[in-house]
Amino acid sequence: MKLPAFEYACPATVAEAVTLLASRDEAKLLAGGQSLVPMMAFRIASPSLLVDLRKLSELRRIDITTDGVRLGAMARWRDIEDDARLDTAHPLLKAAIAHVAHYQIRNRGTVGGSIAHADPAAEMPGIAVACDAEIAVVGTAGSRMIRADDFFIAPLITALAADEIIVEVRLRAWQAQRRWGFQEFSRRRGDFAMAAAAVFYDVDASGKARNAHIGAIGVGDRPVRLTAAEAEVNGKVVDQAVAERACAAASAAVDPQDDIHASGAYRKSLIGTMVERALMSACAQH
Ligand SMILES: Cc1cc2nc3c(=O)[nH]c(=O)nc-3n(C[C@H](O)[C@H](O)[C@H](O)COP(=O)(O)OP(=O)(O)OC[C@H]3O[C@@H](n4cnc5c(N)ncnc54)[C@H](O)[C@@H]3O)c2cc1C
Image 1 (cartoon, rainbow, N blue to C red):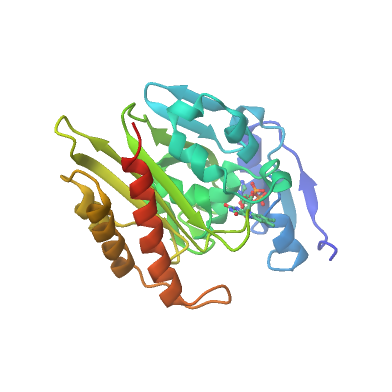
Image 2: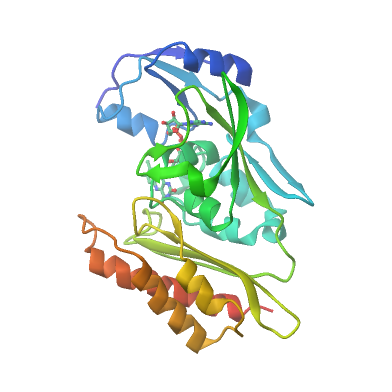
């Protein structure tokens, strides 16, 4: 289908982009276009002005310091995929992003676009919540940081104000001995997750898990932490029995709705299996 008519602007600075975005109610940012353009084609979105962020090369940086990883909003999936530093700086992120869509989409889709789009089955919002990421945004009132857990409200709805632009997603420093696992089930390679689990924990001197983080993707109207499953892991030496108890806790904690892809009961069971497999792959490391 043809797109509805729109005006187009391609600012050279973030400040200019904010001004353009705030200039009218129906303005929308364009990043990779991999979600917005299909929505325009289907008339789900009909912005009168598209503010293209493609010239803002400073937003495409991936910075890695002792504080953690800073992903510029315009960093593309392929930038993450190609960045060998992330193999050690954030292996969980890298493993998750390998599941995003197909080559052509990974070549254009961006971190900021995915976070702003807030699809509950998307990998990047799930990683942001599982890892306690912070989202740096800039608007006409200045800049602010939003915790990922406060950012995602419902499908396609976020805490972002209409005049705000995501500039960066910050992930805390990855601990060298950390155990982690990412498991996703989808009907076909590259499809959105039917359910996925992102898991990590640290190990103390006695081999027991602490600081467990277990995130669930695709089983609700936003990505969530599964704190009951985390409680089954913390303070334990992770093994099959612990993973099975976390599996049960994960399934019990979610209440997914039926949809055209799967029943809620199926997804409820599936997330438990994903958590169990992710924990088993984590405890097999080192
Ligand atoms: C066939 C297909 C399969 C896909 N499969 C997957 C998948 O398996 N997993 C997955 O996670 N994604 C998947 N996607 C989505 C893809 O990852 C997109 O790249 C992602 O949703 C972000 O889109 P984008 O960067 O192209 O942003 P756009 O489409 O350009 O924008 C998306 C939304 O974000 C807003 N926006 C963009 N940048 C910013 C910013 N910096 N600040 C504030 N708002 C902003 C836009 O205004 C728009 O509302 C798929 C897409 C397609 C077409």
